[in-house]
Image (cartoon, rainbow, N blue to C red):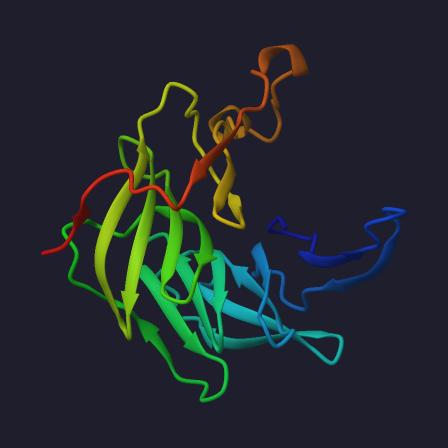
Length: 219
């Protein structure tokens, strides 16, 4: 989504025909839709990066269900069971309980800062795979969750030569497959987008999550 006169929209697409089935537009010009994820019970959630809020598609309308503190930027979404985890680029990992409606930030007792996380994916019942592209070097991390706490962090990949602002990925079985070079900085000026021949070929990388890449760092 973009700011201004245009509104962000959530698009439902038929995967076979690629036809657009339905469009669910925002009703607020200040909202900027980011990531989308489907919870196990079927709820469809969207992050609003501009207003730091978590949105849900309810009865055909986009409704704010949590967040909106005005001090962050919600990015990747990772539902696990009845909990939706959100990467707040400014403040860390946010947690929303679907059943109770309670929400708040996870306590981080690991040895790592958890700001500047973009992509966030669920793995098993207590792990999050995170792409941290706002700190140097860019990294792929595994976060181990214990209740309302990030207990420790494992580095899965860091500063790889293919990295050119990695962004998002998906867990398929025990593999994390992700975009290694979004080349997002090349699109910083909307009025001067790069030509196709100025872009590098897209690099899609895979990490086997059953193999431990490094030590888990706790406080």
